[in-house]
Image 1 (cartoon, rainbow, N blue to C red):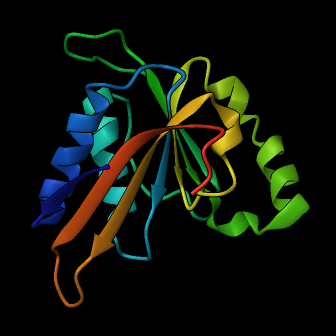
Image 2 (image 1 turned 30 degrees about the horizontal axis):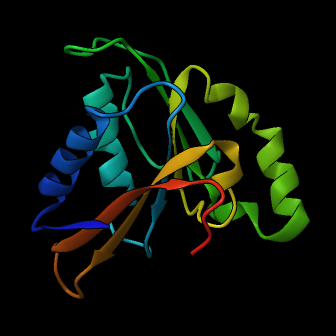
Length: 155
């Protein structure tokens, strides 16, 4: 698993732009970390790197926000679906709510980024990019680790 220190929120967004350079439609990105760790800032960077249209903000209260493809330097345009699974709950009810979002359909034409999705959304794709963020107490310094995982892997 690769790891990097991100001293500021701007560095977190820049890292998201870096990740976006290697993402294509059909990719699933799972973001893990406590409140305030930088999951939405990282997603803003991914959206910027993908060139999606519109402001990227937390979808906490609507659960999923779709961003249409825009201009993307050096690659085919691709949309992004940003999901906040925090309010989905746990167990069978969470799976039913997840199924209602129809994310497997979105995966065919967009990058799907899911905050709070670990242990819940891995089965949506054959593989996913798992990104863990941690924030130092009383600081903007974050540590990010990431790796591609097969859906069958359990950690």
